[in-house]
Length: 112
Length: 117
Image (cartoon, rainbow over all chains, first blue to last red; front, side, top):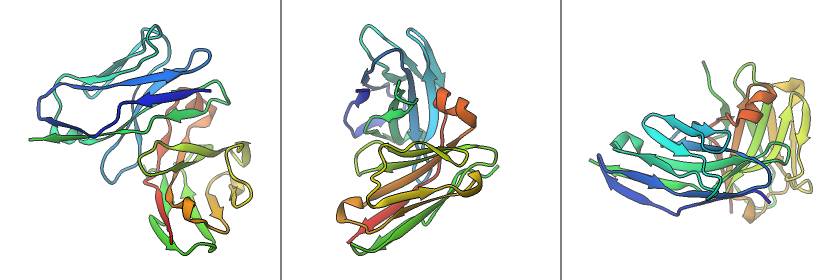
């Protein structure tokens, strides 16, 4: 079945450090891929998405490229800020009724 | 514009008691979702509504869980009787039409945290 595997956290970085959060997926067909973010005390919100192979999603300085050959969608940011501290969820939209399947989330803490 | 509103934010009950959660989606969003999030895990879909119709409820444990969405707006998720393993966060989300489901852009509430003692 469709699933997402996300690197375990927590991830702790200093401000301005480079961020990578790994995400790989298993799916039939051609899924769409997403990163959601949950800031403290808030609901999950869509950060970025990619709907086909080689697409790059980007938002707020974050990027992720849909790699079909490696079934990956790693999240990257060149210089993190304290305000980026949150839980990040990788997700895919599968072929079963268009369901979203989420990874377990990665807690990111950025120190000044 | 108001986001997805859920209540209560926190609920503590004893096992075998009933509990209900309420969700008010974003105005105009006709698709509504209930997700279950266990500690340290990602959200898992329980049920999806298109207007009043439950179009995807195969993951809802129907022996103790029920949901309704009268008039295609607000929704209620009920557990009766609650078990210890039901302790989790119950998330409600909404999206604009079926397009939201296709694009994956769901808008989530802050969740209702249930503790069953």
